[in-house]
Image (tube, rainbow, N blue to C red):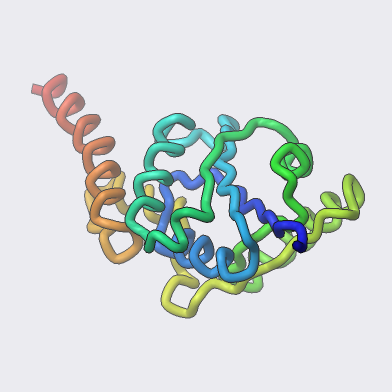
Length: 177
């Protein structure tokens, strides 16, 4: 029996988008088991705290097919990515690319990770054409300004974003009265 191929798909997932879900589903066709690593990364000033992002990602995975769902684990991490990969027995890091502009940064990171541990490969998955323009940063900006984010995230995630921003708007409006 051959060893299981374990992959790690890391990100902040703040929030998880339809593009992320697309990469997750496609990655499960390449690896036997996929660990979705939710990075704490407080330096990016996340909209949702880590535990909430983990819960949101898990809830989104719960809506995938049973065959895909059973091969995915979601875990938070705050270590070096390569340490997280080793801790989970992964031999592959999955990275999604939306555009050429993503490539330079991802290429440099893959090179650094390879220097840390050359036994772990980085695999780039190009975003499906319908998701190439989606970024969590833009989704947050649209949500913050009261725009419709449903073309970019699930209805469940859109509600969480609206609740996050509407709560803040209600508090500000109440203070301004």
